[in-house]
Length: 398
Image 1 (cartoon, helix red, strand yellow):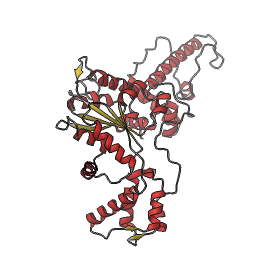
Image 2 (cartoon, rainbow, N blue to C red):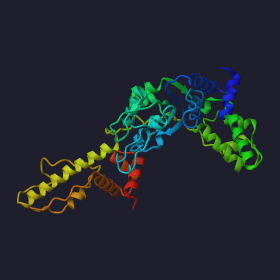
Image 3 (cartoon, rainbow, N blue to C red):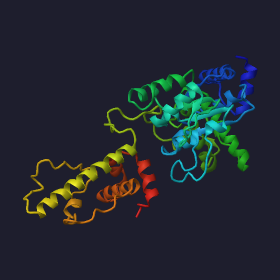
Image 4 (spheres, rainbow, N blue to C red):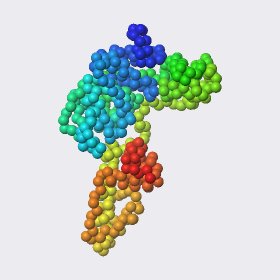
């Protein structure tokens, strides 16, 4: 690769370092920029993956068109389809007007999907169709739309394991992986760590008008041999922290060790532990539907049993054959002990809406677990993040 061009690109995008793996990644990005293929960027958290989609876009034929970066891991599962593909007015609660998704507004340009490994399986199927045909259907619409968008995706997930665990579609992986760019972690970039540290120290010095900190030779050795699990992001935080709080401007190895955590095994390219038992449901909505249907069936059976007792038909609830087993994960035995007597001719109570039943089920399990959200999420088979969102949505914090 032309050395002059390489240095110009580094200067333009603020890239610091001369590691072979870094230079190779920049070279690949520049070579594939004019070719309209999907690109998958892989690397650990904090290595600077977000720079490379910008390099690809700015050096492609689409450079005059729009560029959008979307963090897929930061968008809730229930709204990500709407964010990406748009929705029609009234498509769901809160959809008070029509909204264009990123695939519509980025038409002709480039769309960067960061943390693509976090996409739900349903959204992955939609994305695969866009990649193969350029077509998509907004949420709540029956009209097929066309788009011409170049996809650049990035992930820190071990995709081979994610595929084998059923977390990511294999066909989508191969469709995204037309071109693969791998960004090396900081621990594999040698002296680049000292160059980056010096840059961050000088930035702090210029910004806050203070003398810059400097590393002694023994401190440089510690810096280069540290694993840096947070990569460049962690190094920046350490440099900024030391610039403000260090008493001396010359940083020794002893002082540096006070600012960096003890070494621990790094595990950046991650998926769920395969030893952990996975729930058989694909998402929390199916889980809640199952809970509600089972609960309704159990209550109906209980009413039938109580009616038979009131009519004089002896029936021991504990010994009665055919009474469905109650799932301890979501049914409180006291619920049945406190059930009101059902008398002949009593009017049936109105059936609650799905949202009301969902709220009641979550509230009941929270109460059983005395507000323990981790245990509640495990019993409901949903993530803690989803449970937290539901608690906020249904105002169950008190």
